[in-house]
Image 1 (cartoon, helix red, strand yellow):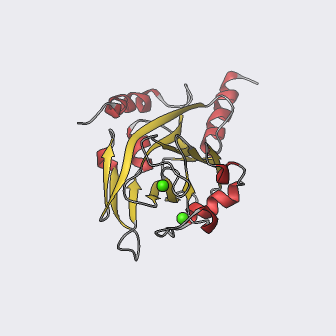
Image 2 (spheres, protein in one colour; image 1 turned 90 degrees about the horizontal axis):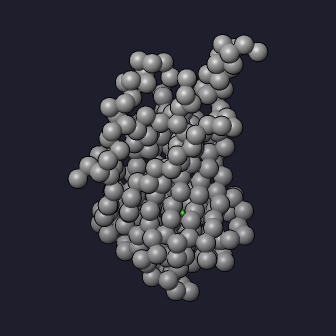
Length: 225
Ligand SMILES: [Ca+2]
Ligand SMILES: [Ca+2]
């Protein structure tokens, strides 16, 4: 196969699938905490892309909006590959409320057929052996309530430094999509960190003018305040 043919194939693959050899990066969005009343505390570098408000039909569930497509596009990345939610270790850890309780994790603005698989790693035995579908069900709806527990299947309690990951079976390219993440924690005081897993364009795929156009935007990675 000629080099030109390989390059052409590379472009074809990148428009549809992540390939072995694609460079993955993790973008740490920072520290999030619901404070009630539809408001959040956010300590991170991506303020312009973060919002919050009451969930639909609710006057006590706070939902965080994260413009994932906007953030990753501003950094020059090619696709969204997954989402990672990590307990900060600064929460209350007891039998009835082990750490941040993730109630909702919903990705919109992507291919409606996109498949996301879920996994949990951490100290909460209730979730450690749960299959992807069970974790997906817990985070599909904004349905946790005061006093809800693991057996209600309404949320994922992370436990100290526990991690919930959502991986897109097929990474969602950011051109022409408006990937938007809605997140909620089933409470008003517990904190967690959010990272977006992204795919960097492979060298040689971008044209020189396109790569040059991306350079100033990459500098926006620094703290904004
Ligand atoms: Ca909790
Ligand atoms: Ca839920």
